[in-house]
Length: 118
Image 1 (tube, rainbow, N blue to C red):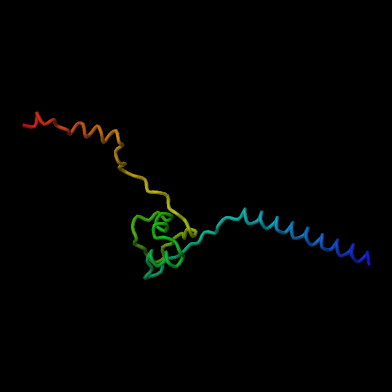
Image 2 (image 1 turned 30 degrees about the vertical axis):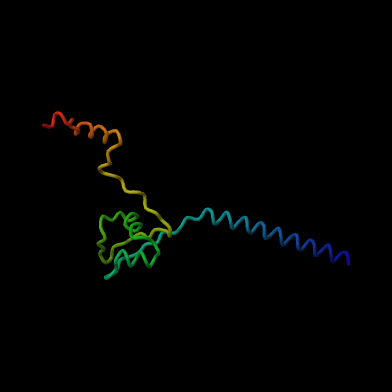
């Protein structure tokens, strides 16, 4: 009987050790994988809106990742589909708004005292 218990304990220990090594290997493998890039070929009748709904991404994300200037598509055009949850970077301002100091300066220049306006 004691021999049976020893064999059973060894078997359980071996099974647990194997599970631990498998789980460590799996976690290492999953962390090194890169998300796969999906490419989509535009078909006649497609629109960014239809494609965005199909892949559960925003139209803005599709436009940003594919560097599209407008929403016109051509059949045969290849699009990159971003991963779910992709948020495009904020657009760069070509004409940034004036700073608070610049606003104050321009207000001073435009201000005419009441005594000089008559």
